[in-house]
Every structure is written in C-alpha cells, then in structure tokens.
Length: 412
Ligand code: GAL
Image (tube, rainbow, N blue to C red; front, side):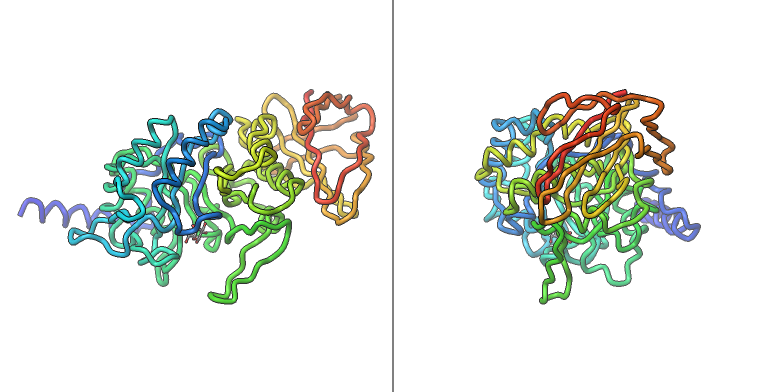
C-alpha cells in the first residue's frame, strides 16, 4: 500500500513537471561535466551495422590500446544497434544477445574497462530501435537502471519509431532516468536535428547529432530507395545546419556523426574529413574496422596537432570565413588567443593559395573573438607538415591538391 501511494505521488510530480512545461524537474538535469571536450572513441555502426560480437569488441579494445589510439584520446567503445535480443525478458528487462555475446555483456564491459577504456551502448526513444530491437519507450527508468548495473559510461539514444512522441520530453525523461539511476553516463542524443535539438538539448545531454547518417564520400548524397532516406557525404554534413555553432560548447556538443576515415575514401579525403571534424569541435568517434586499418588511416586519426584543435579547452566550433572559386578558408578561435585556419580545396583540380592576412581580418560575431592581422602578427605552424611556416606579415602561399586541406595554427 505504502509503495502504491509513493508511486502515485511520484507520478503526479512528473506529470505536474511536464504540464508546467518544465521537463527537467525530476532527475534535475544531466550529469554535468562528463564531456568538457568533445568525446573521442569508436562506434561499431559505420562498418559493422548489426554484425557485432564479443570477439570484435575485444579485438577493437586491444587495438585501441596497442595502436596508440587510446593514448591519443580515443577512450570510448560504443556498441551501436544490434547488441540486444529481439525481445525483453518476462520482467521487461533488455536482454543482450547471448549468441553474439556468449560471455555476457557485463564480463565484456569489465574486459573493456580493464584496458583503461570506457564502454557505451545504444538504444532508441521509440518503441523499437531502427534495426527492430526493443526500444526504450515506457521502460526509461528500468533501462537506465539496467545500464547503471551493467556499468556503461555512454548511451547513444536514437529516434526511430517515435510517431507521436515529443522529442524534448522523451530525451528529458531518459536523461532524468539516467540521473536517477545514479551512474554518470554520457548521454548522446541522436534525433538527427529533426526537432532542433541544439535549442533544448543542453540541460539534457552532453552531445547531439545534427544530421542524418554520414556516408563515406566527399559531398555526395546517397539515397536509400528502401525507406526513402538519404545519407550524406562529410562536407554535406559539415554545412547542413546554418547558424548552430553558437549552441555548441563544453559538455553540449554539436555532433557531426561518427567518422568515415578509413572507410573507402582517398587518404586525402580522409585527411580533409578529419580536419573538418576537428575545426567543427565535433566528437571524434572512429567508425572504421581498426583491425584492418592502414598506417595512413591511423596517422590521420591520431594526428596530435589536429586533435588538440578539436579538444581545445575553449570548445568553440569553427566557421567558414570565405570561399572563392572553390578555395575555402575555415577558422576556429582557440584558447590563449590562437587560431586554427584550414584552407580547403573543394574543386576537382589543384589550386594555388596566395592569402593576404592583412586583407582578411577574422571576426567571430557569435562568440566575440577577432584577429586583425594589421594590428597583431601571428607565428604560423603547418599542422600536417608539423613545420613552422613564417608569420602573418607575409602572404601565405602554397599549392593545394583537389579535395585537400592545409591546416595551420596561428600563435600570437
Ligand atoms: C540511425 C543512426 C545511426 C545508427 C543507426 C542504427 O538512426 O543515425 O548512427 O545508430 O540508426 O540503426
């Protein structure tokens, strides 16, 4: 009886919270401070879709350590869709697939943790996940307790099969459930930007997808006839949403999707993709098969200088300063008055850069930073060559290949 009264009381508090338009009351907001720089790691989806198992996870964990990826900052392994059985058990609990994970999810997570890595899982706010496994709708608190008991550190929460559900409320409910379950878990909102998550996601989650799925190409659109949806080349995603950079920052990142570095583009395009994700302060979640990765792919993913741009503590997303005949200039304010600059050749032919700093002052109207090269001289370092490259007193000149980037750091 006591229990019944308590649960009636609790549910009336929740309902009241929602009816007043205050969806954050019950669990009092996300776990703060879990992602002060963009999260880095690996996710199974881009390469393996639902073909995942414990051997793959263990081998991936081992390589993350032995390849130097963990040392470079990649510390999350996230299992995407496909880790569950098709049905919940009779008590309504999620059931990890025992054929794919014969030793059990808990022991796999312990293995990953023993390597110094963190572990994440995936589910959906809807009735089913996108691949048809049990979704969390109506089971939020039970699933949050399940994840906390398993010991996960990251939850990606997707948006399939959600007809009739209100996005801010659905994500707030899961955020509250995680908070109430008590284990700090990074909460990754994956509603693809359909409901402008950047406008309401900050008190709820630590990062949020801003687009539909990525596709391993420079700027193509890949249309899936079945289901009538598209996935997008990395430049399409980089430019899909206008005016959202002001919503991104420490502990609440715009997420441009898992990377396709090492998934079939040229090494030049991989390099450009990686540079753009760093310029955009995107989470850096690799999506390639680490067991088959080439030296070139590993070198792109672990470029320390580029990673330090992504992970800069100021946490400000970069933006496009100019575009002239397919030669673009992207800029990103960094801590201590420095700037990252990326020249990008969008065209199919090589180009010559001759950039007069003095004629190109930078003004960041969203965050109030500026660089006037008539007043301050910066030292330049080329981050891909790892070499000094003069100062901003002289024009910057270089050849740049098709689809390539040159990334510089300017130090005052
Ligand atoms: C999509 C999501 C992908 C992947 C997939 C799994 O909605 O954007 O990143 O998680 O679902 O089914």
